[in-house]
Image (cartoon, rainbow, N blue to C red; front, side, top):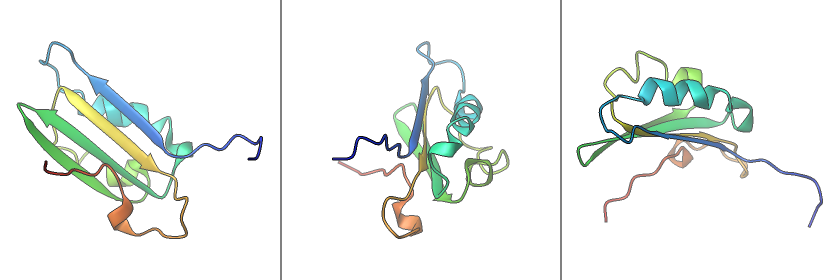
Length: 102
């Protein structure tokens, strides 16, 4: 194993424990500081009252999660992911976060 440090992806999560504030725009702004960790794709998930909304796609955080695209995404719990492709593909289906019904 190489002794070089390898950094992949960037993940940001913000939760308002009181559950009263929308933190989606704050989470996106914090995630922009991690943009260097991945420029292949970006996505976010918001959680509110037991429901999840997901937005994801290829590109930079500032494009995929632009203010006009996240205008309807609100919630006191938000996760943002920016992808660093470790495979040779930029398939948009690999953009995260993934949401699976269980």
